[in-house]
Length: 112
Length: 114
Image (cartoon, rainbow over all chains, first blue to last red):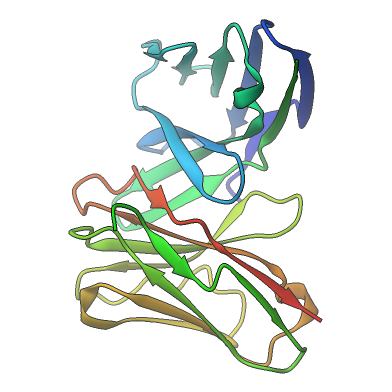
């Protein structure tokens, strides 16, 4: 079965810290890897990564994909309490398979 | 509205009863997905609709689960004879047919089966 593993499962930091969230996977024939932020119920889209080694940035958040080592990381610099959420990564295969395969997520808590 | 909407936001039901959950996708999105998120678990794919094509039902956990999408827009997920293990948040998402990986999620329906 396709497997997407996120680590750590949970993380508590203080405002201003930098965090790195990991997403590793065991398959290679996917089209893209996506990161979502889930604060209450609805996950909101952060990044879509399709090529290895190309960093995507949005403000204090950045992400990169390593297709050789089969992982992606999400970095958040200068964390704020509003960054507290569950961060989900997912694989998208495309073609006839249009579903997203999600990891279990990393719960990030940013303390003042 | 601008985003995906779902109703009800919360539903409490008794074991054995049927429930219907509704999803209204973003206007113009032809692809629609249902996912389930149980406590402490990641999102689990249930079913996918694309235009008039036959839906991908490969994620439905049992024949008690079914879904329809009428007129290529609103979708209803029906769970018959609910069981306690059906308790979860049911999330709907939609996307453009050309960019199906960028799925926009609704706020979900939290279902509790007593």
